[in-house]
Length: 196
Image (cartoon, rainbow, N blue to C red):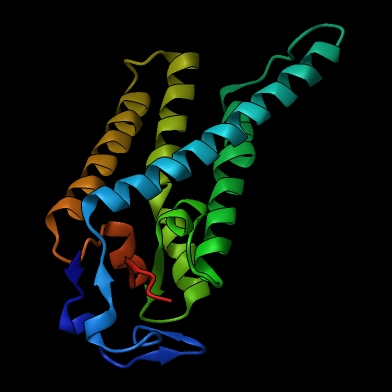
């Protein structure tokens, strides 16, 4: 566990949440990498379960259609994938991390929470939108590749961007002393150990 850097411990309180909400610099702790990965694993399990249920429901609906699965354009497929998976998952995580106890399901299970320098609601929306961008780019690149070929510039660029962003996020968590990745920097947020 690492101590939160002093610059993140200014007594800035916005609404009922601030960086000093649960005490002084001494009791705000940055979790270790293993704990962050454990929280990520639990969240991944939850998202995977949702996607499996979504697949079962969609397959059941398509099975009832007399002519089978309807044809769709790449743009329609992009829209369906975004609205059925990325948008609801991002919204749920934004709600969880923007309201008490300011933690996703995985973070709650391992005793972590997210604190913000400003509005938790605004910060959580920014944090989770940026956090799930690699997934969205991956969707877009894969769907475009299926329809038009994976060697097209659009598909190749999106898939490369998806992988690059994910690697940057992981490296930032591993290498920065405060454990903040790009989404945290944009949102003014930090993942800390929940001492309550």
